[in-house]
Length: 159
Image 1 (cartoon, rainbow, N blue to C red):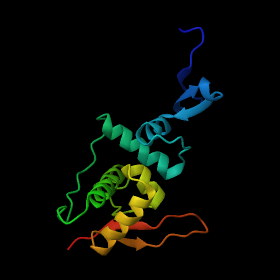
Image 2: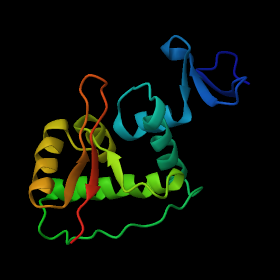
Image 3: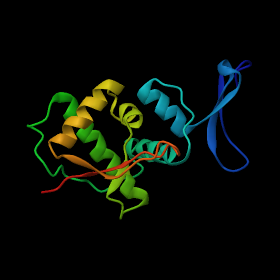
Image 4: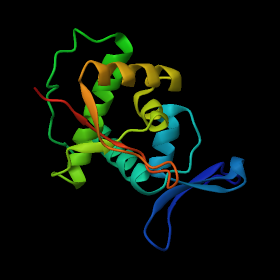
């Protein structure tokens, strides 16, 4: 109803709901992209699986989906503050993944993705992830591929 709106929500012809931001030269943002920017403070064009998992995280946060809970298989007391944050974030990722693939037990967890997902800085993620692996809380179950930019898959270690 404004004469000069700064943004508008609308549905595209293919059914995607998004927002057009007139302050950013009319850029179109999907709801997962807006949620990602809200949570991380970064403007990023989410694609493929990243968009899907952020979409599910948004739906969980607003109470639309309730993924199965995964209890941490190992005690948190032995972890540093950043290791706890990263470990809980990884478990959250695995829980949300269960919404679309209940049989999946591992997830891609690159340093860059883990930083945006957990809220930790990139260097903190590298250190925390190394510590979690060394303490046998998580393990790499599938190698990544730098040529195709495919992240390696990680899983929880269960005794």
